[in-house]
Amino acid sequence: MNFFSEEIEKLKASGLYNSVREIGSAQGPWLVVDGARVLNLCSNNYLGLANDPRLKDAAKKAVDEFGTGPAAVRSIAGTLTLHRELEAKLAAFKGVEAALALQSGFMANLAVIPAVMGEGDEIFSDELNHASIIDGCRLSKAKLTRYPHADAGSLGDLLKASGANKKLVITDGVFSMDGDIAPLPGIIKAAGEHGAMVMVDDAHGEGVLGRGGRGTVNHFGLHGKVDIETGTLSKAFGVVGGYVAGRRDVIDFLVQRARPFLFSSAATAADTAACIAAVEVLSHDTGLVEKLRDNAGYFQERVRRAGFDIGRTMTPITPVMVGEATAARDFSARLFKEGVFAQAIGFPTVPKGSARIRCMLSAAHTRDDLDFGIEKLISAGRATGVLK
Ligand SMILES: Cc1ncc(COP(=O)(O)O)c(C=O)c1O
Image (cartoon, rainbow, N blue to C red; front, side, top):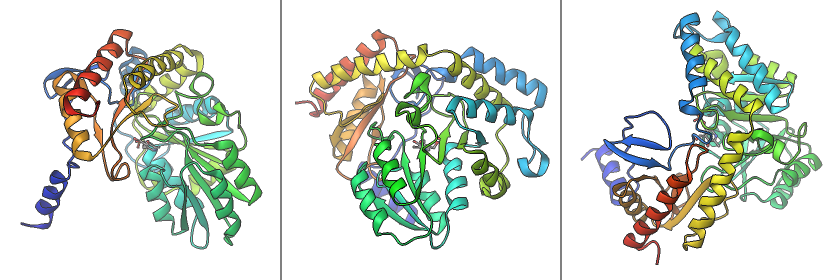
């Protein structure tokens, strides 16, 4: 056996082999997955915008006007008027001076961290931060210190002990596997006391937290206290893409230094126009965000009452804790057979022994959809021994 097949066999034996399912329909509360119609408890389409006619129309018009590909990187061949329009609308939505649109949320973190931090600097990163933050830190060559999850006190001690000239604290706004919210007031206080900048990745906060979904900083009323925000346009915004938001000087600097901006082609006109439409919807309508919150409260209360452990979630991300990866895989397979698409998540995405089914809620779900999902979670939970 060679390296590749040995590794694949090991993954299969430990329940960590990831089978990618095939979707044969548009995103929505129900999907056709591997040929079967199933309830969608998997996607990050928090507000149901991924198949919204307003976004689709905007994308179609943009193709007619601007064509398909951007044809080069923005710094060499110029930027579309659409990119600039999206950046202005995002900045206004997030309540900051400026924004820079990038190809994805992952790229946004790779754009910022190595541009801002380098040798001799020190980054303080929550131990549960997203993989794109970890990779951005690695690329930067700065010293990386991981602080205990959401622990502003320990962060303060670590910052105090650091002799680095430039310090940057990075946290997810909402943690993608547990659904808890970063304690931003404490983090900002600790950073301020020790001369550190603060960066928040709000991929799961925007469209979910704050007034009309303006995100984690808005949720805490901390505008102007966070130096850099990154985010994605692929979750609540329902399209694809990423962005950095902050002061004008931060964005101007990134245009000069951020490698994914300088060396990788821009997002397409269709995606960018659809993103603009999504920001416009969110800027004027809080109804979808309210429906999402109602749905999350309804579902989580009933799932908890049924006896499941859903951890420390404070958002629509609902981790149904299982423990062993093989048990989570069996639970997910049973759910799928009963008509529910809810993926098992195991190591390395979450720590060993804390495998779970992550149920993602959306404003697009009806009460009947949620009741169906709860009923099937209970029956599949009993059948697989997860629910005693
Ligand atoms: C916290 C966080 N940051 C960044 C990303 C990456 O976003 P994108 O899918 O737009 O690359 C994700 C998505 O999984 C995420 O959860």
